[in-house]
Length: 278
Ligand code: C2E
Ligand code: MG
Ligand code: MG
Ligand code: MG
Picture (cartoon, rainbow, N blue to C red):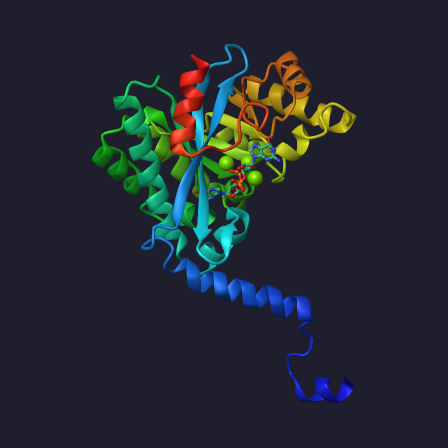
């Protein structure tokens, strides 16, 4: 072992680290071809009004099915796409595909709703992002008010001055912003006040134990009150039970999303879900 360490400069890598590194390399190489090989898909998770129970939107969630590796989670491949720049092309594909899908649903007679699309940190730093989004929406002929962009609190707060400028531009173009994973990102309230946002998405880590954990209950209640006092909407993510929904309703949360209503669905599955809701 010692002899081996002497020879191998990289012996501080444990076997697990080598396996992880090898997987990252494999994924990074395979991801280069994922778009052209049609391995990417969007799934759609309904967002419901807590008051009316109606579908008011869907969140587009990216899926990657690799023929040999199987389903790879966005939590695993998006950081890779961010580090090698592929996220720019992938992100643009997501924006266009989501816009086209919603346009198709509206034209086919589904009730108007909002399409929420996740933005990565790298996309958010692209200086032409507002123009790119406008050009995609115009190309698809989707009115801007049907589009909502989700940006995590951590990314927004990482560079708040840029965030203010970009959010103002998007707002001027009639595009809504939601702060995703709210409560996990060390928000500075003085910046939150300056962000031109429409909605706070309460992170699912607070929703999970809302029934049993008094601190999580207090945090969720505080976020809902804060949002309400700032004139913002709230949506709870990761709602899995009727009890969680009841608590959120009692605190005045506006919207909910989670397995209690539906998992993320293929476009065809979502159409069945929306029809069955009527
Ligand atoms: P997110 O935007 O916070 O999305 C919520 C995640 O929670 C999704 O995981 C969703 O499937 C999952 N989820 C929804 N309801 C429930 C529930 O009731 N219980 C539990 N346990 N989980 C629930 P998913 O699809 O694996 O996505 C993970 C993350 O990957 C997303 O977190 C988002 O940050 C990122 N992501 C997904 N699609 C995109 C995309 O198109 N672009 C970018 N930049 N990021 C994306
Ligand atoms: Mg999201
Ligand atoms: Mg989230
Ligand atoms: Mg998340």
